[in-house]
Length: 269
Image (cartoon, rainbow, N blue to C red; front, side):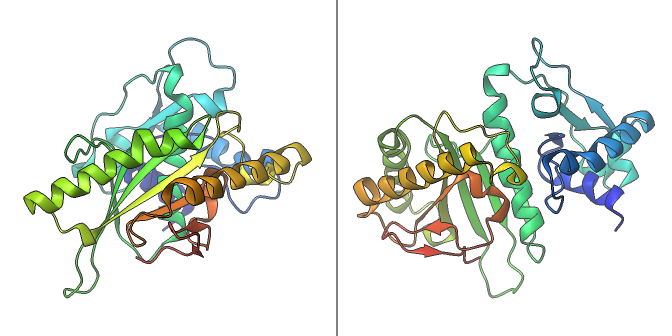
C-alpha cells in the first residue's frame, strides 16, 4: 500500500478525524520535518476532495495542532472502503481539543506499532455507566482465542489521586457488576490508564522531547505515574490494569506500561 493511501486508511481506522500533528512522521529527525510530508499530503487530499477541514469554534492559536480534518465519502471510496464511511464533520469544542488530540495519538500509535493486529476503535461505548475514552477491540487471529478489549482512559489531571477516586473506583464497581450479572467475560478486558499532568504540552511530538525543559517535565510525569501506582493502585488485580505516561504514546509497544505491582512490562495481546 502506498503511503498516500496508508495515511487515509489510518485516518478512517481511528475514526475518520485527526489533526496534522496527530499524523506526524515518527521517523523524522526534527519537529518541522515530522509535519513536512503530511502537510503536502493534506494539501493534495483537500484539492482532490478526499478530506475536509472541520471549521474550528473560535480562532485556534496553532492550526496544525488544533484544527481537525475528516475523511470524505470520496476519500473512503478512493481507498476502497465506502461501506465504512460515516459523516464526521462535527465541530470540536476548543475546551476538548487537547483531550481529543490525545485520544487520536494513542489510537494511531496502536495502528502503527502493532501491525500484526486487527483493531477496531470506538469512542462511544458504555459499561454500567463507565464510558472509556477509547474501546479497542482486538480481533482474535486463532479461532481458539477469545476477542480481547482494551478500555483506554486518557487522564490529564493535576493530581493522581483524582485518577483513582474519579475513575479507578468506578471501574472496580463496573467489574463487580459484570461479575454479579455475568454479562461479560472479564478476562477479555484490560484497562489502560494513560496519564499526564495539566501542565504538560500534549501537542509536543517525540522529536521535541529531548529539549531540556521538556525532558525535566517528562521525569516529573514519570514520578507521578509511579506515585499513582504505589500509593493508590498496588492492591488492584494485577492482570486488570496497566499504566503509562502520555509522553510514551509513540512507543506503546515497548515496556512502558506498569502493572499495579509496579512492574514495567510490554502489553500482552
